[in-house]
Length: 76
Image (cartoon, rainbow, N blue to C red; front, side, top):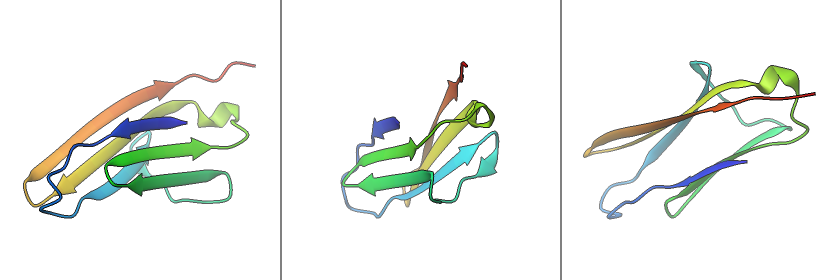
């Protein structure tokens, strides 16, 4: 699970977008995304070798945007 905490004054709603190797991620049976009161996470069940790559989260509101990327390696 990749997770982060996003600070917000709650004056403006936050839009969260997740990307894998530059492509938008959609929640599915194996992949779930969470966003609740500044806590964001992506949970990947039964990780496979094709899940290795760069995951990026972009948070946007009326004041601007921020992004964070992490690279996941899968062994085995």
